[in-house]
Amino acid sequence: MSKKVVFETNGDVGLIRLTDAPLNLFGDVFVAELDEAVTAAERSSIRGLLILADGPHFSGGADVRIFQGKSAAAAREMFERYIPVIQRLEALPVPTLAAVQGFCLAAGLELALACDMIFAAQTARFSQVEALIGTTTLLGGAQRLAARVGVARAREIVYTADLYDARTFEAWHIVNRVVTDELLQDEAMAFIQRLAKGPTKAFAADKALVREAQLNGIEAADRLILDIGAALFETEDMQAGVERILREGARNARKSPRFKGC
Image (cartoon, rainbow, N blue to C red):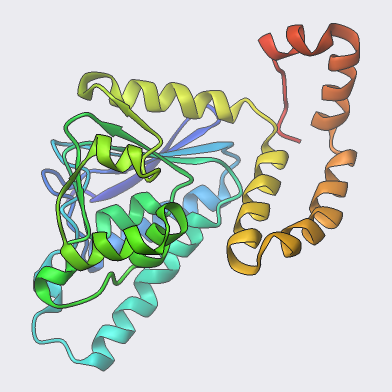
């Protein structure tokens, strides 16, 4: 039986590929394999991660049959297994990017929102559809949308369960970039490869500061700089970067930055 989610590497880039086309529906096996893929990413030496999907759609969300007849206690047990996978993906200390085509619905959108950035194909369509079955966003979509787009717009998205095109989500700062369907995966790969050549430890600090500001405010993030910002001074990348600026000047150094990720 073929896997529904696989992890592989391409140089310094990790790939989590959703392989259960056409809809890549979430269920116990899918999430268990996603968990395995995130674990593999955590244990690897990758410096960037791309999530992409086989087939015409990124994900149609959950296979709703897993909700049928479930008690509150059983649902709680299920999401105690599912939610940490999303949280661990979100916490990876490397840049993460989702490349989205076709439908990106419910749990599929929540998976994409757990990434640092989203690239979308022109024909991609997005929705938190949970209101259609009388439930909430069960893997954290409402709160992660609010972090990107503000509370009023997040409420509109989750209350209406409307279907939105890629350009709308780009205008609302949920999607970072809209590209042609044909070039989606190539452009996403090129972008994450660029980031994987960057200062990995500095990117981890960037992620931590943004997260701290989201959770505890700007002043708390300022305080965190004293720990994680100061620590960067002892990295090989920062000291080499300073020397390169002094030797070549900022304009020339920008043309060919060279970092080891350490």
